[in-house]
Length: 148
Length: 189
Image 1 (cartoon, rainbow over the protein chains, first blue to last red):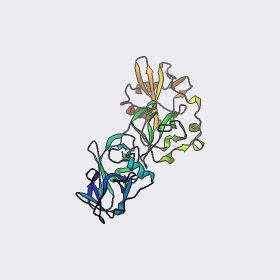
Image 2 (tube, rainbow over the protein chains, first blue to last red):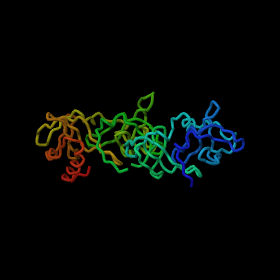
Image 3 (tube, each protein chain N blue to C red):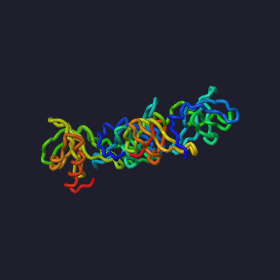
Image 4 (cartoon, chains in turn orange, red):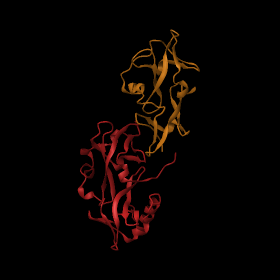
């Protein structure tokens, strides 16, 4: 398992292994609704429309670069969740944090993930509280829901 | 995070978002609290749509389907927790006008008028239910525990004389008072 944080990876350059060219920068993480894993990355590149790199096309998360299998790998998407993520409507970092009893606890300040599998490991709140993934239920456009 | 037991005024629940635990989406907004005053029982909620085009939803939310009511949201398992009015219990699909309790005189069984009902108090959590009334009196606001032994006409809410001993003037101390009152009556409602 290789642990990274989203804040550290956000904005990092994404480079294609086959051309050695930069295809863009990490703009958003598209996270599954059940918060189990990162499904793909939204890459802010030269194209007008949003492009996404599937998790399986990502080769490594290095200290300085994120490596993608090929320059042609990032592609457009018409999936609602991808487009909402690209617009920032579903965004883990900064999302409202709500518990199952209906009380807010600030926002999500950062999240850790395993770059080998894409699994979300946990989140850190704006109040400095670390919450393990086992206590996190979902990520939607309104909130991240955690156990009370 | 620790479990929080919490009392809220029914009037404060209106306008809260209804959020799905499985999706993190604000699926609706509480429009009205539906309360059966004859049984002093919380039945459920009517709903409004969220967003720019707000308006009444055809779905309703039964109290039993609520996972939690907090200061910031009403939590449900999923969007399937809300039922269309056709499938909702009769009191929730078509609330009866005689359910009105707000504005009733609160009269003790000894014959003294305590005040006027201004709100219903709900205990939140996994099993939200009504626990009492907020009553405006000449000396200020007090909270009176509800009981199956109370009777209601639509004009007067009759409370056992013993209840006066368990009234409180702050919501924070009212939860323990409700439990003591019901233990004394042997009433688990």
